[in-house]
Image (cartoon, one colour):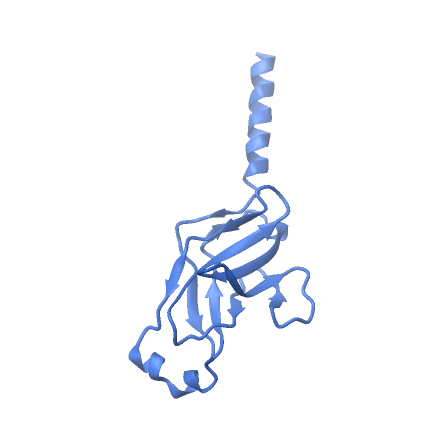
Length: 140
């Protein structure tokens, strides 16, 4: 009986350790227009994050593997990174007048060292948004 109890306690403890690693949900991140050169990406529902303090860096990756913006705990005055804050949207330098296929990647110290959200697609919502002179004023 003692061995069964010890096995049960060890199993419960091991599963609690594993559950501290962020995992993806079935909800895709959402991209929205910020201005003519930037979008905001909301990833707050794309992951189960048991302990936000374990996340070191979060980035937006566009199809092809290119990095376009992110946030980190090791924030220094940089145009590429913003300070990592819980539930804050990521700012990415992307043309909001174009369609983008993207995902969000969380980096942390434990194995596995990162997890990706499900891939999402951003499509400008209306022709008014695509034809907006404000958005095209600074578009690249």
